[in-house]
Image 1 (cartoon, rainbow, N blue to C red):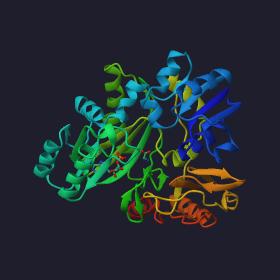
Image 2: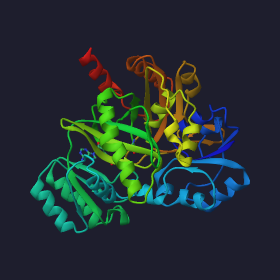
Image 3: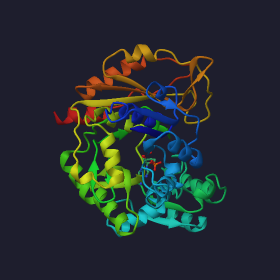
Length: 428
Ligand code: AMP
Ligand code: GLY
């Protein structure tokens, strides 16, 4: 069959790379893709929000499966358009994607279904939100309700910082309509983990655990980014905890959505804090995580395509996923200045040399070709990814690959995977 992947970042590179290994697939297209993706797919110049053009393209190229990467087209109803046209698209429709598109909706769904999460208040009035912050005290977390490209969350160590975040969103309109409503919630303490699960609306099939690294600098210091690296599996999620997450979080979420007429078909992403009193939801996302996908999919032994189809067709109950032992680590190389302002167009060298080592794969996040050269074209540029027999060897291989790659201003964290290593050493 022919497949179209919608998107053009590191997550989509990992998806295309994995789908390309399927014997069921003849040709892959990616809209808009990137130069890394172009090694496995034909990139077509259509934006992720150009619904009409995407539909036309799918009809004209005999595409049996479309896989939607990012949240914006999902929240805006791309999959609804495909469903109406009788075409297969992987990802939740707009009603189910509300789980990510509105944090207030997600919090209310969790309350209705007794899903453990941070205590919170919901506000459409800045004064009331500020009063609530003053009574609760710091640390406290302020979140805009709508989609804000990962920038709508402030973890405030002081009351003043929370008040400033409320004013930014509700008085100055920094996030547009996304900030008309906000959530103020309890600051959870613990270690974070990401859990993905396929869902066909009734049955869920969880994937291997992973952990992202949000802050820009080593030791989790500095402003939050889209994610500076990831590893899988996350040892903080023991087998016992995994079962608890499945039964107290993932299943009630999918069942709650179904009972409210929003069957969830696609990839459900639970961002969790593993607290002293058990796992609690920080957020739900309606798509694969970035950069976690880059470490989860390389460990998946099974062909991914039958699962993508089964989510759409409601056949997940017949399936099981096989995983490779060992670990996978991805180190993000970012542009100088990111997550603040940065320049583009810096020439990138050394990817081929890095990929010569076995088990190393460099996923492109923000790259493009300019006059025949590969150059930077985003904040997060590359996800330098390596598999190893252990987390330790995966870390070593990933960083050895990183040292072979260069572009002006490149920066990365030096401690991706260290939390896993520390936890494993403490238990051995
Ligand atoms: P998000 O953009 O929703 O992924 O949130 C960004 C980051 O903020 C998360 O990965 C957490 O590190 C942090 N965060 C969000 N909510 C909370 C919370 N209630 N308690 C502690 N940290 C949080
Ligand atoms: N890794 C964070 C996200 O995909 O939202």
